[in-house]
Length: 87
Image 1: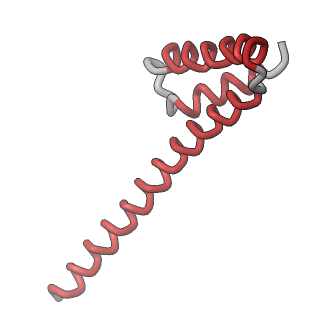
Image 2: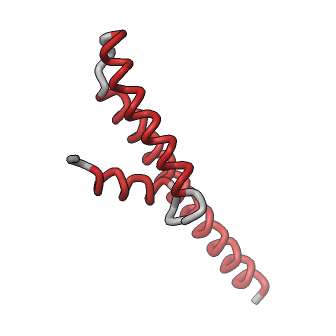
């Protein structure tokens, strides 16, 4: 099937390479993708909507990493400022 490797990389990214979370995230993504086929068949909503939902999860995970990086930079700057002011 096409895209299995891509799905695996997405699952690993969402789980942040935590082997304990991978089965749960994989089950969640598989449920979304399996439900997309039925949703499209019965309601006419395109299954590409599921790809958008998965993309939102990836963006949220990436934003969390970005936020923690910014927070770490601010913390380092605050420590450096306190060292400079004490000298």
